[in-house]
Length: 566
Ligand code: ADA
Image (cartoon, rainbow, N blue to C red; front, top):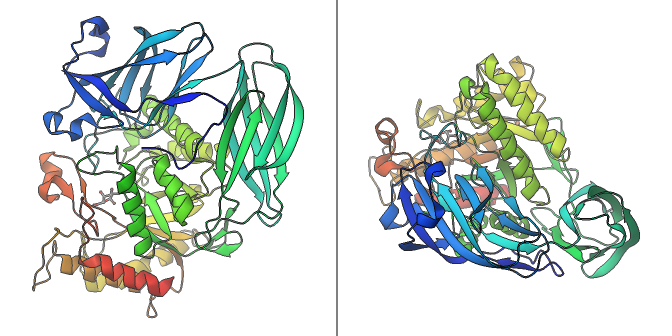
């Protein structure tokens, strides 16, 4: 459960992964919990999702996790959590330090200086779906919201001054010029200190810096002579090591630039044809605390199917998955948490605040990943309702403010009555001809409506991605009648989709630059009666592999057709 590269050589830091003491407290109010009265009668893996284990399957409530940490001296220390689902409160030696709402994103909790020796760490974790407390997790979303400390946990010892965040962006790929923003913090007036940067072990920058306050930013522009570019076909990576005084950070970068130019998405000046899948980061045995081996297997299968693109639906992506995408050359659409949110949500201050935090944390944790080429928000929100438009604009502009180097989009299924198109850099459509409406033979005609409608509303000058399209298949269901839910039907549907978009007889005249099939793997969905009628086994069965990553008939078909396009 580790990142693909060491992130510090100098800074002392420890993984807190392992098996922690555990107690499921059930439907209790977190404010009424007496920490010293908790009876830890169980144990739970960290990272792990407690409700992905049989004993707690399907249960929702408050859980308590406990471990101990050794604070080697009185220096400031920091806990870094990669993903807690979906609400938590953090205590050290029974002192409440922080609480966090919203899964999928990395956050830090600072332990005040002065605390030393072995300390008790307790994390109260709540997987209840409470729209006030965790408004980004709603019970009608079409994936199962697992609960637990689902990501890595680390303890960092911070010195007198430390690098709080390093942001690296490519300013000019031809010149190999990159821009470093080094955000630092300090506990006392730090004064002068040394700054050095190496690239793949070679010194590329050295200077003495005067740190004025207890926080600030140092900007450095570097031209990395001889560096190789990152692209899906040649995913070259370089290791930067930034040292500031006695603290440091290592960051693996890819030199590349993404831009929108007319109807194209350019990577290093070349138009991209994006071919791939929407992927949920879920597994029935692990929830979204997916072991490295399954991530490696997923990436292996995406590459085996000749994909160069994956849409991380519908929440910020696991950093370990992004590391692998960086390495193998998969372009990623990384999106903030959302699923068919309503105008009511988008006019709620509580929801808007939660979404802004999710966006800020998603960008902070993944801005340096070269595989991320596109930011997304608000999957299938009520974009036909003018009341929802201001929040969409706020979210997309926040993304542009945090990261001006990537285009932004949202996926809509409201082709004809969407009123937010002009807010997005890339127009992304979720369409289901041949599944929810009409038949397979109607797919070409239905897809041809996309560019023609966008032209009619003055949005035809932008790139178009078909961000979802597909159909369900029950693994193992083969049928001479080739009906819906058979693997035969799903394979036929996807064959017509890919041919209609990119094949020699396409009526689209190259107007669509990207496709992410819905979806890579089957995933557990909600259990509510209404949706279960459309979700056999309470699963979303539109994967081309099932939840255990076993290939359906469509797998080899997509592999063959994508190979012809590569
Ligand atoms: C929507 C949604 C997906 C999934 C899909 C489906 O497009 O964005 O998450 O629910 O429909 O399977 O119907």
